[in-house]
Length: 167
Image (tube, rainbow, N blue to C red; front, side, top):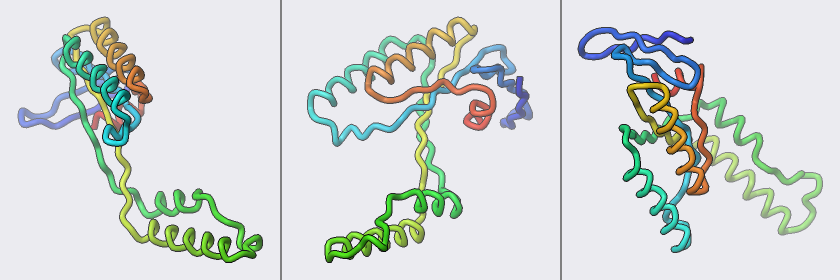
């Protein structure tokens, strides 16, 4: 168990991370599911309709609160450099054609541009709350199943990952 302190307008309350749930001072428990991303605008009409139908069904069948959180955070410069370094590159020794020279120049340009431009990481979280662990598990499974039915990854956070996401 990971104790965590959270400040509120009413003072300090203790929340405890217990595996895949967060225990509240009032006895209720919460869970957080991290999802992958989905750009609804680029989907074809039938896939978009399917995703929207699944999301609508989730919203209508949930009997517990559901909170959707989209977090944006700026990447640290060392994270940006690490991502740029992992980008595919053309071996300069193998560049012998005009097309190869242009490819190499374009990669160099975009690597420099990515390193110079602020970069952000987006994280989509779905949180729910219930009076008992059994009801929380029911709700969390429904959320994960629905998100996966949309074709998106869903992972219920636990331990340190849950503590980091919750605070």
